[in-house]
Image (cartoon, rainbow, N blue to C red; front, side, top):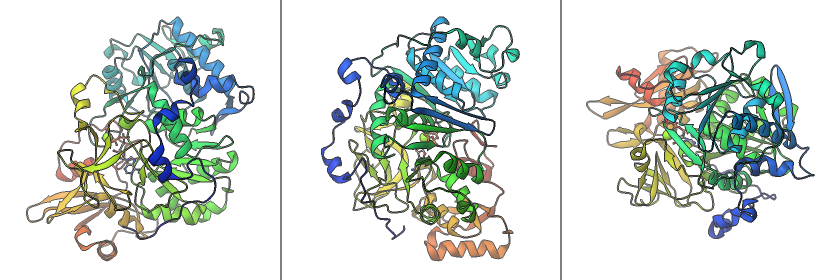
Length: 571
Ligand code: ATP
Ligand code: MG
């Protein structure tokens, strides 16, 4: 859509020559970076933390820097090893065994990270849940996964319907001892008595590690099952895509309740031995820029929704902070609008690198790399070791520039191994040796992939196929538009018409003239057939808590249909 190209860096990076590496790389090479390659003993928690704690040069390096408005705390690799060992001992005492599902339902905190690692150390499967889930969402996920233990806080306990959860045997509460009722396990009390050494449970690469529930953008969230083998790709993409170097201070803004917050908020940075900043509390431009400034963040991974909010808050505020520690910025979760990339270049003098992947894929798959030219609006090219293509409904590859199913050759290291207890659902992703993503895209002649929308979201208007993303991207280029969500609305004549929902920037009032101006802006600046016939101003675009526009909800509300599962809807 955009002719502009942002040139790749010619400095030294971990991935210096994408094309050459793409031709020659095999995953066997990556395996040599793990101790299990020599010892045969596997556990991702060992590779991410204990290995560094055993290295005299690294043990006192800060692994976790936790920052929230009322608490700041750092843990070195050595301290994190000890605390997670303590929690592993607590789990063992409570009878938790390999393969058990242990869920965590709590805000980001040092305790979250120590206990998450502890769960992995006993060989159990960790299930992180976003703290804002309400009772039904918590119940659905604990029931579906047959979790036997939950780690939560006294404040959140009222949202855990224990009497509805026969499998749930034990609840650990992280809080003041005075707030812990009888019958519950007191985290701090148990930790104080637990030994700091623990004999790790060695597992197989194919043993269970994490269950993540998807964002629920398209329907009821699915329980996606990942195994320890994923570490190979977490590590390697941490190198190539995050471009992590020994001295980086890294900040991933995602909550660990979503896959980005574990694959790239826990595993990738720690497997690479990098200091990981975790921020609690609410979003505000001041707080975010302040975090970068205070902690000298060098690599920053966030999401389009956050970048759009920062963009709306203007450039002046950027200048109030010292942000020159940042050298690499990345985005995931939704398509990254070209407008946002251009703003990023102006605001930070850096490119924002889009990365595409899904809960099911476990790790990044199609990305932009520091040394590669960026074509704004494109999600980039597959990581070395991965084959991507656009296929039709029979799983046959389509030629360049044709819109179709974005598919990945099955068998990459971090690929999900199951949809929990739903084998038929799992099977339904695969066709002809391809994993079919459910996203629609095309590939240009030079191999760049261009996201168009969810397959279900692609609009068919007067015989033209229009992806909502490009229309939304054009809409937000208009100075009055802060956010946009675009759907197809059934129409007897045209099949569907394009309807846009827009939230206006501060200082703009809704008027017929303004809406017509916005319509003309898309018509002239993008394409006549893609200009929305209807534009409705709304206060806010419905989003998942992981920050994705919920087009299905815009559509069902528009058509007066049932809303479906809204457990992940952001209030
Ligand atoms: P559900 O599967 O429950 O409907 P979801 O698909 O939103 O929810 P996630 O696994 O969190 O759950 O999100 C993956 C989806 O997010 C992708 O399929 C894609 O539609 C979108 N996505 C992620 N990254 C990008 C990106 N860089 N560009 C475009 N879309 C992206
Ligand atoms: Mg999905």
